[in-house]
Image (spheres, rainbow, N blue to C red):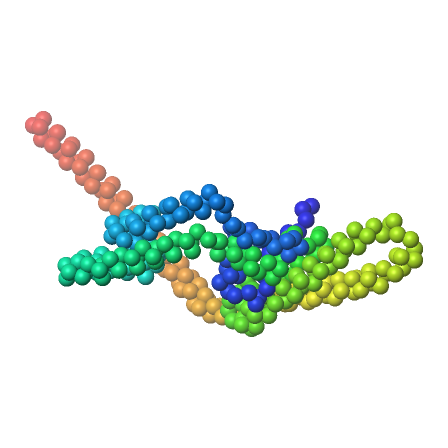
Length: 331
């Protein structure tokens, strides 16, 4: 039997945009029990390479109009809708792509070369800053570093804690994914707000239980004397009481999920009963069509018999005509 592996739990007070980054499958979350990830620092070789090619990119894309066109065309080739693909890269950048060459050419034609140079310098500077920012710490990695300790991963829970958390998450998922929730029969706003806090508070308590149990195991109780074990007994009892309390909280969530499942069943029966009159009418129509079909089948059988008799009569007439023709030929 495999051990339960709960999904990561996030503090609901983390900003929504960062929560989305932390939930992304590609984001590497670090357990709260481990040291926070360090901010990445590029080495001298990477810094030198950036110092060389960032200005080249900024010149190509920020000053030369062809760079803009190349960038947005290549970035959009894989899109089913080319226009949608272009605008996916940012309306502001697309607007700059369209406006910058016109502004530069207009200023040159008007004889305002210094202003055209200023526009080109602004484009160069903007692209330099933009590329440098993009080359910094990725947003997901930054969120994982900044909010370290405000999210909990499977590594923060031992087997008993992971089992309880998985039970709580299954109950929460059952409520949030229920038909009654989608139909508005439950307090949708309350569930959307309260259940994530319930999950987070349960996860926090279970992570603390895990830390305390690991500390207790590190003390090697079997190697301690009886008086020392007696001093540690109140700690053991406090942990057991807390585990019992959290377990009861999880069981309350499971009871809520069972009641929601019962409500789903009742809601399903209500929908069946609500559609019953209309279904009865359709069945009556079907029965009427069936009776008509029987009558029609009898009429079709009669017409088929008439056709067969007509075919037989025609065949007999043709045979008689042929015989008559032969008789005439022998005269």
